[in-house]
Length: 76
View 1 (tube, helix red, strand yellow):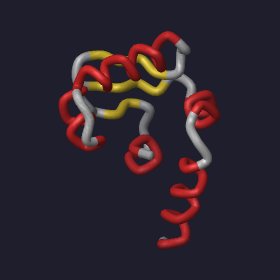
View 2: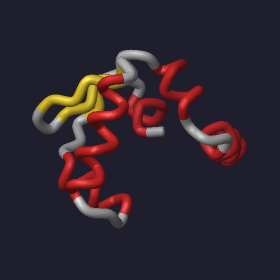
View 3: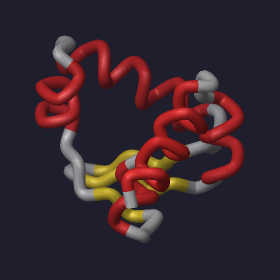
C-alpha cells in the first residue's frame, strides 16, 4: 500500500518504524523482510525497502490488498 500511495518502488521505512506501525517486535519484521528478500520480492537496505516485484508481492499477499486498494480508490 505504501508503494501505491507514494508512487515509487523505493519506500523509506526502517524496521523499527515498520514494527511500530504493525504493533509487533522489530525481530518479527526482520524475519518477514528476510523471507520477502529471499523470494526476490523486495530488497531491504538500511532505512529503505526497494520493491523488486510489485506483482509478485501482491500475489504473495492476502486478498486484503485488493479489497483495501478498492476501498481507497472508492473514497477518491
